[in-house]
Image (tube, rainbow, N blue to C red; front, side):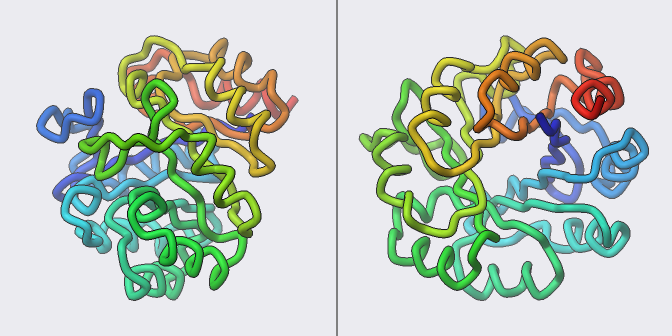
Length: 240
């Protein structure tokens, strides 16, 4: 199990939100680079970066902050999501050595775009799948759909997708524990590796998720920032 620290960027600051409410931001670092430095010192080899402004606006609004982290830590694995809606944006990120890009809303709204992106950049695209009660949501959690998560995954199962980030948006940022049952069900259904997201409280939650061999990682946000999960302890446990 790979615990992956999340850095959510809003207006150039590292923040955390409450259940996807973009007005509820709590600032943890004035500069996202400082957050990256902190988690790297704690032992992480990978970061999950989200452009929150971009997720709402459909543009890469915090590209400079993301690029600053990329340039400062060239050996770090970085996955980026939020507002990636054009091939120009995709090329800009990959040309600046971002390792993986997360595409969510476009996978629902523009199937041809998503398929082309996956085929043009094999094993570099992560499907960001935000769901509630088994149904997919889009546009930074603000729009619900009638598409089942399993149906969406089935439609894309033959593409060279790197992995799927499965977020239960009813759990995200709540520190109430992940939706292990649904995450495991999707992992067992899919032939694509799963990264769990939403609700992770502590090391015990990570251990529970690690029970499924198809769930290789978990994005950890509020639990790390609030201290209920110690990154060094988690990395040490899963590397022993």
